[in-house]
Image (tube, rainbow, N blue to C red; front, top):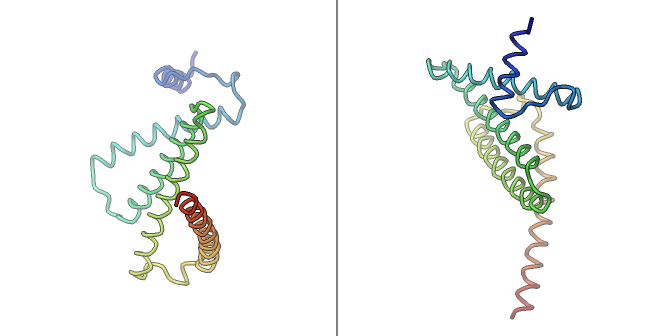
Length: 160
């Protein structure tokens, strides 16, 4: 007798156009596919619950939104890279870097607001590590900006 869960998973694969079976891919790949299917089902159920009632913890909802956004972007990235023709991969990689910069800038703005409202303190942990990471990032960005300005000046001198 067929296992109803496996039948449902087969139906989901057929609906999505993905009919790969475990024998056609590595075990870890199949496990990831299985987890993605289970998570998709769970997210759809969670969406129905969110639509039917309010969430009393705004901070948890905010964190969930950010986690979902990050997961969505990662899934989109994986999909785009998987489907990209070799000649488009550099363009896509450049776009993805720009998207990471956008998301990081938003996180920095959110973090700054948390600091202003004193939601984060030294006791929050990781502040020194964050400071060190930001200092290293700033150093790299300064070097990148200097290089850009120098190449821009050289180009301007050549044209002028």
